[in-house]
Amino acid sequence: MVNLPTSQEWLEQSSQLLQARPTTTRITTKYTIPNPTAKSKSKKQRRPPVTAAASSDPSYSAAALPPLRALLTLKTYDPDSGACIKYQTDKAAEVGRLVASLGRLGRSMAAMPAIEDAPVSDAPQAEEIPPSKAEPIEGKQQAQGGGGGASKRKKKGKK
Image 1 (cartoon, rainbow, N blue to C red):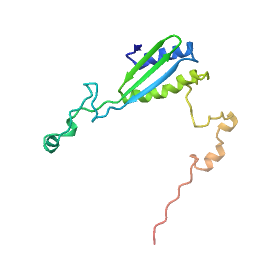
Image 2: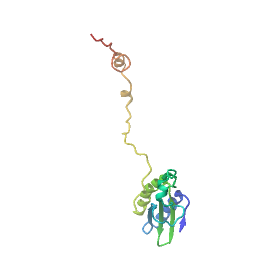
Image 3: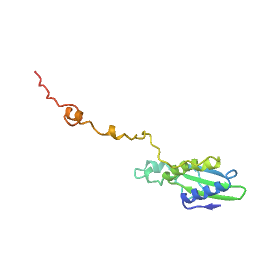
Image 4: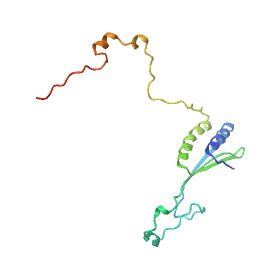
């Protein structure tokens, strides 16, 4: 099993493994949220137990405890070749990006074509206006005061 240091390396190597063996390769995800009350195996994530004396102490605060870190583990495995690629992270921004990229990897597993990364726009494309319609009519502009807006009138005062 290969533990990779960056998510980009995991994406590239997983993509290559999926292209080589799309029918047998599988991607598994595991999201682990540690339980603060359970006895943990890892010393890094263990919190000291809260006692009645500590909770009544005004200098004791829950904010002083180190935060528990949830972990996302991604593993790409091919049983035929025995290749196993693993990546583990606790960064929230990276978790969102990795989950989004799983869809792209899943398309190759399902033998579907890849989606092009073209920008999607909801706005309709502007049509070209022929030069005859693009040129302003001079008679109309002069009749409207040259600006093309509404004419200016003085407001009448209240009686």
